[in-house]
Length: 542
Image (tube, rainbow, N blue to C red):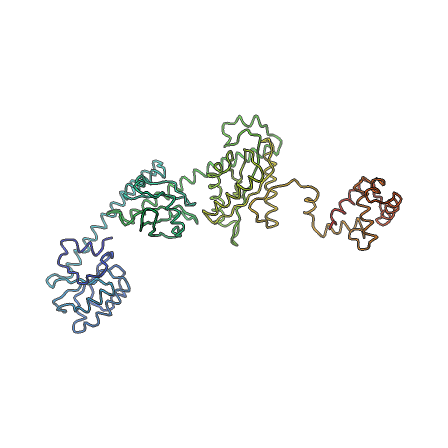
């Protein structure tokens, strides 16, 4: 878009005299209008240059103040007044007031019709726009050719940098630099330093462009433009352009939009290809697990396959099942949550090998959770520390809270399905009990953990049916009988061992056991009754 300053610099407009020397001439001109009405501000758009003879203001020049106010509000490009017909001159106080309101006032000669001036300025603006459009279309053809030839994002950014003649970089949704133009080496500041400053300034907005001026260790007043690459996502890629005001004509915003569009298509294409490989890995893991669960798995035969997607022979295998916790009340099936699952997989797939060498990331494609397979031995404490670090790192990039559920480690690949099932069990328990710990580890269930899943009312009914009054004894006598019963069962119903444990006489034990059997109306030492009584005692432990 051409500015008033550029128009006045063209020789054919030398007869237009700028009267307001203190106004901003950098304003763009979108349109030119001829008018003689005082309320023209109600009917024109901003960045319009007004041409007038001032007929309405003959003998009432003071009303020009109101006109200037209304034009200032809509950010008019300027007011060009023809003198010599209705107004002999423009009063200095009007010029001074226009300076304070930042409304440029031009004087055009009485010998030149306003229609001619309008035609000349519009022709100049039209020529400029045609050149800009033609150049933008050339850019579109150039980038489209790159896209059709499967050019990488790095190649496209390189071409973009040459086009704008200014440093450019492309960031993924995690604000990580993934492509950079060749002319970046002119700067002393690294891409990482600039990304950190932009993040601190909250310059990355998913729904709008941003222009910001920052100070770096090496550059003061560094002008930067940030463009989100729109692809109907909550977490887009970003194009970062340094010194955007230095981009020379005819590279326009429209031309930049063409480049953004091609980048969007290329990112979408890459994303689809990545998705295909991700699903292939998922199918591979599903087949492996299925064969193990059906006892059809042979470790030696399995490794003869051409592609194992990173799974290798190792003395250590452990599965970590990943859960993304939604921090808001948003339903887990929402598009935003699904996008978080997708980005979590991508981030883990990229960074896991660095944090935990030998690990492989798979997708549970039924619910899109990530599955991490560890293949290098690591202690439980070190694993917990590593996973907590991963949680912290990803939260620094995006509002994603990642929780890790660890199965037990095993020394053979044959037990991979078992480790995965253990990780899923602990994940289910986490959800049921609202456990928000970053790392949870499966522990083999003894009888105590198994009994935790029994309904309280059912446990109470069963215990009272078996133990009667001894289920929740109140009197000292009943408490002693319960204690004797437990010791008797713990010692495999042997009277002597029970007497020694309780420090009482054998006859006392025999007497108490007779009383208990009479109270419970059953023989204690039969296998079935013994098991039921043990279980009832466990369920009613305080």
